Image: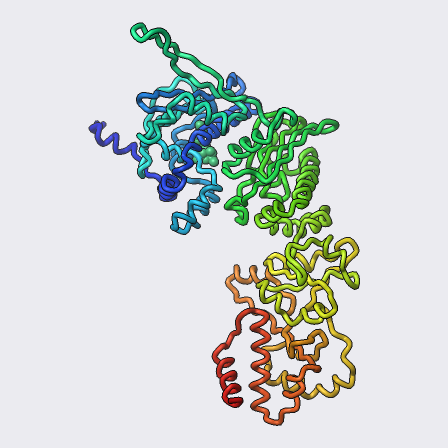
Length: 618
Ligand code: ADP
Ligand code: MG
């Protein structure tokens, strides 16, 4: 056997942080600096999670049943030395856990978030505010962190040490009771946190309703200076009661806000909350929050669920995306059931009737609350800006609540902004709700397709959200009114006589534009404009799908409609100079496309034709 000198042994224990962690540490230290006090909330929240996990195991797993569960989070500090420690007797971490949890970022959401950062410190700091920074926030206040941990039912304990500068070290150590202790050696400018008053007020502010007791240990000096005695004392500094189990009348708005902030790691205030206790054949409590800002991962496939499931106050999971419908994924909160068994597995959860009942009642409550918010237009604008797209997503997936969701939608229209369908309904004509689809609101507003509707004083909804084009055509009806896409309204009132008169001219136009257009026809929907293009209903889903498969998506050529009453059309029709006719038709077609899309394909041709035209008129 070869004996290695100590030096080499030490070297072997060093590990390097995953690149993303260095990135996160760097970003945090620079951008969350003014809010560094949240480190304590994060560490207490981790301790509480660890207690939750052990609680569940002692109740559901035979191997853990002999463990007596006496949950506690202890805080100790040394004011002179600037040391602060947070200890729990929860599940603990093995050597592998330490490496996996405190050296790598496993969650793909977090990884993607970090990779999507721009490098622009200002923009990135705004983003990180909506993001649970977790354990690594300890390096905002400490230049050395020591984690000592013994996993429940394991024999070997381990210590993890790091200064947060790229590396950490793990060694075996001795620890009597299972759980985790985190010691922070505070930086010079953060020594203030090793102080009784400061700790108490931070726990009150962020962690009062952590469901386990938080015990502060401190020394009290007694007697006169010359015969000073030191007495060791302990006190519980939080309420330690699951907030959602407290009756509504005993809670103030601040209690809810503070709970929300520590629960969701979001520093802003929620827009609203719904606290509901149900008794009867099913017993459960729900507490939901509607945030005022969308989380960073709202539109990612790997978004984190915002709902935690508890059974009789025992935490079960925060990773079940079926607890609420997907379109309500911005809602944060808690479902605590009295009826589910504690050892529910994920598969059981999926088809559990109790849960399905709770889910559908919860959706109704949440939609009713959003409806309440909608009465306050200013507040609703905040909501709609962040989550309006998801309400539309709901139209597509939650058929049962379609009418409620439609009532929550707001649109731009030819007569106003933020128009509800109730408002539209008051002046609806012909039993229809008319809408126009496009990518750009300004272009939509100037679309020639609207002319006839404006003339007839018919309001048209202007839909420029990407999701509109596949949601709205499938909606069908709202309170007896039919949704009608104005580009699909077909003009019928052109007389046979005029049709005959224009028939050969239309053929000529078709020949000139060839494959660039679908049909060329006369239109009565125009008043001021000579022509317009009418695109076929676009299909963004198909478009996306084909792009994902690496194929090019070719839009179908639009129809080209001509206004037979317009002087320009009348004059072009009677031209005998066929070259001139071609130039003018091409110019008209390109300008109509410009109005629709905001750009044209062959700007060079367009300009040279335009120049020719200008020249001949000077
Ligand atoms: P998150 O809590 O969002 O998972 P953190 O960065 O706060 O992220 O913590 C990372 C992981 O480290 C946790 O998921 C957990 O597995 C582990 N961990 C942190 N603190 C503790 C603790 N006190 N006891 C047990 N495990 C812990
Ligand atoms: Mg955490």
